[in-house]
Length: 171
Image (tube, rainbow, N blue to C red; front, side):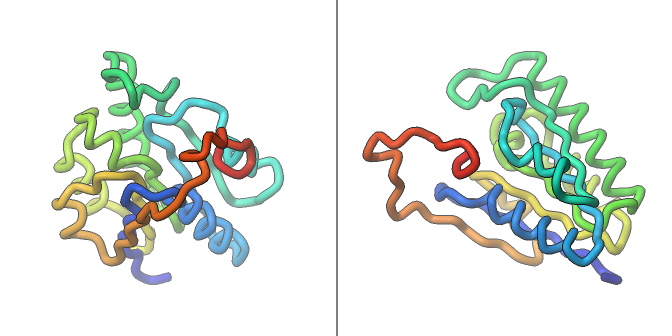
């Protein structure tokens, strides 16, 4: 890839992180390197184990636990800021072909850092780096700079029938 593009997976439906993981698998399957940074998340999601089975992918989580139903703490904000600094460096150094900023939109929604900081990091990336951004509530400023946007729309979900999240399927 000579030129990397910016992709956003957003919306209220399930599948944003899953789509980013699928793209990541596709990329590593032809020898590309992927960095998958997860904002807000610190819980043990199954995908972080893929580094044991799949080459050329690195995961890092910048959260400690999910605060979605509570206000973010000072520690949540600090972790997110450190995560953005790390992602800015990863984007710029060009070591990875694909950089996933998972749940970045949620971090922006909770004002853990500014959209201007994110746009600066994306703008300063190595030219070949493909950027994947996930999370609900994609801000208009990111929508404007994106090259591809997919909105996941919930039509039906088994959790409305009381089905709990299933390891390896939902997390």
